[in-house]
Amino acid sequence: MRAVGLEQVAPLIQDIMLSEQRINTERELPYWYPLSLATYSSEEVMEALHSLVTFRTSMWEKTRSFEEAFGSKFGGEAVMVNSGSSADLMIAFGLHKLSGGPLETGDEVLVPAVTWPTQLWSLLMAGYSARLVDVDPETLNVDLRDLEAKIGPRTRAISLVHLMGNPVNMDAVREICDRHHLILFEDCCESLGAQWNGQFIGTFGQASAFSFFFSHHITTLEGGMILTRDSEFAERLRLLRAHGWSRNLRNPPEVSGGLDPRYTFLSWGFNVRPTELQAGFGLVQLGRFDAFQIERNANASIAIERLKPHREQIRLMSVLPGGSCSWFALPLTVDGDAPFTRDQLTAHLELSGVETRPIVTGNLARHPAIQGFGAQLRVDDLPGADYVHENGFYIGLHPVRSNQSLGRVFDLIDDFIASSS
Ligand SMILES: Cc1ncc(COP(=O)(O)O)c(C=O)c1O
Figure 1 (cartoon, rainbow, N blue to C red):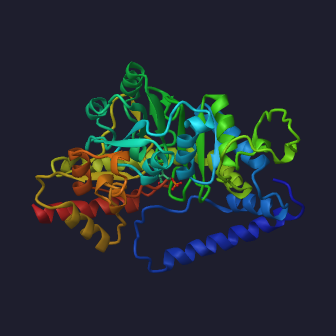
Figure 2 (cartoon, rainbow, N blue to C red; figure 1 turned 120 degrees about the horizontal axis):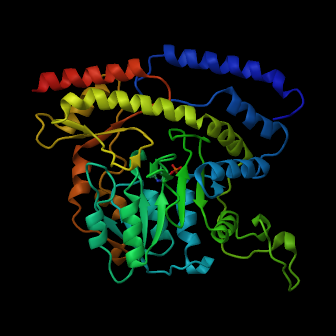
Figure 3 (cartoon, protein in one colour; figure 1 turned 90 degrees about the horizontal axis):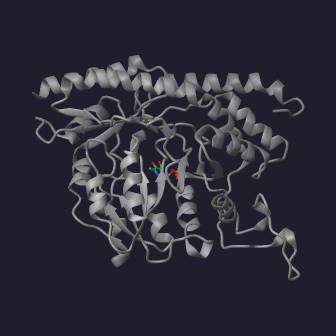
C-alpha cells in the first residue's frame, strides 16, 4: 500500500478500533459467546481506505491480486464476486447453454436438502429443475445412498455442499459422477481450506463457490469467489460477472461489424463485481488464514474433548477418515433419546448468553419459500434432513484463543445435562 500521508493515519485508526473494541467488551451485550467475532484490524481498514483516497474503488488491480493469491493457494483460477450467493449464481448460469455451457433449461440437478438456500435458488433461477437429496445427520452432508438412488434419466449434474467445513467423501462422489456422466460443482462457502485426502475441496468438479461474509473463514465483509480449473469457464464467468461485457475478459476477441471494442457485449450477464475495498480486505485476510486455522482447530479440539462424556446425549458433527475439516462453527445434535430436547438446551444456552442457530436451513423443504415451483422442484421424504431440522443447532467457533469462554460454554452444557438426567 502506498498513498502519500496515509501511513500517518494508521496509528490513529488502530487507536480508534482498540477503544471501540474496549467499549464493546464493557457494554452489556446480549451474548458473551456470540456466533462470530470481528477478525479484521486496522490493516484491512487501511487497505480499504487506500482504495478510497486513491480513487481506485471499482474492480481493478487489487481484485486481480486477490484472485491470483487465492487461486494459487487453493488450486485453480479464481474469479471474485460480491457474495457467495453470487458465486453460486454465476456457476449455475455459466453452465447454461445460453452462456456456452453444457446444461439446458429443464435439466435436473441434485442438491442436498440442508444447505444455504441460495444454492438451490441459483439452480432454479438458471432454469434447471432440482431435486432435494437427503443428508446424513452424523456428518450433516449428503447421504450418498440417497444421492445415487435419486439419479434419474434427466439428472445431469450434482450441486454439492460441504456443510460447516466438513468435507464430503469426494472419492465416492467423483466415482458416482464419473459412472453416471454427471457434472459436479461444489458449494464451499462454509468450508474454505477443508481437504479430502490432502486435496482442497472446491477442486473436484467444474467449479466451486466461496463466501467471505463477516462470519466466514476469511472476510471481505460481503464477498465471494469462484474457483475453477477450466480457463475457458473462468473467462465465461468474467463475462457473466460484468454485464456480458468483453472488456472484462483476459483475452477479448477482435470484434467487427462497426462495434466499438469499449462497448461490446458478448453474452448475457449480471453485475456482481466486487469493489477494490473488498479485494484489499481479502488480501490481508488471506495472509491471516493459516493462523486463523490453528486457532479454529485448537477450539474444535476443546469441544471434541468436552463433549466426549456426553456422547449418548449430544454429538458434534463427525468427520470422515480421509477428511480434514475446516471448522466453520460447532454443530451439535441432541440425540432423539436424550432426556431433554434441542429446544430446551438452546433456550438454556441463549438465556445464559450463548448465541445459537439452527443448522442453516434445517430441512429446506419445510420452508415457505419452497412452495410454488411445481414440477421444477422435486421433494420427497427426507428423514435425515428432518432429524437435523429437529435436533441440530450450532454455536460459534472463533479464530482466536477462546479456551476460557468456550470452557464456560461447556460448563453450562455439563450443568444442564446433570440437572436433566
Ligand atoms: C453453504 C452456503 N452457501 C452459500 C452461502 C451464501 O454466501 P453469501 O452470504 O456470501 O451470499 C452461504 C452463506 O453463509 C452458505 O453458508
